[in-house]
Length: 295
Image (cartoon, rainbow, N blue to C red; front, side):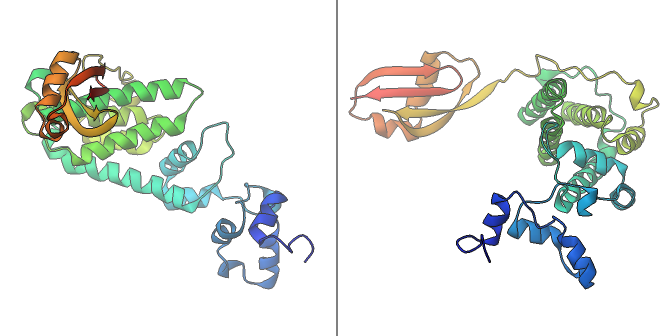
């Protein structure tokens, strides 16, 4: 076939800006095999996925999708799939992922209701939190900050939603150590529901009510991050000896060079590289890196 002598079908389609979806569905339909061919799998294997178009008979019926997954899932997937300036490619695996995420959120909140329903999440005493509790609270307020910035900056819904998914991932692993930690857990759940409400209002409103709330979410104030909660108490940094990473150490956030060097030189993983050597220079980038130059 002319044009395919030195090319694969996939290369030919890409070069000519064609996709398997370009009218091939009409051929399958005429042959009576439309239901037997996985068009999306074929496109992924052979060519670029065709953009939705009535002329290519590859549009998705929103009513059928909403009936199967729910309106909240469709909205979440549509906003999460790509930034506004990029073309949108509908993938069944994508909407299934959004559906799984909302189910995880539902299961997580319902599972933790007995632990947090009667807890007041206001006025959290930072000093009474466990180390893990402080990390979760910091992540919660980082999420508020990032979500707001991404939503206001060119409407980057996808990265804003991703920040909430990251927070839920951490919450699922969180094991509260003391009573104050449960306030942090309640606060994080409330923040997720408030941030997601404009995108997935039905599930958020239902979970909000199950938390024992007497008000509607649309009447709630938008969450504001606490700068104090964002402060780190400790940070892990790499330690280099002559430019090569030899260990990682945990230091107090904001520690000066003298304190960091003391911690590093007392670490077993660093000691052996300093034995019999003279420290000629120390390069310290606060909270990020320590490099010890020896000879």
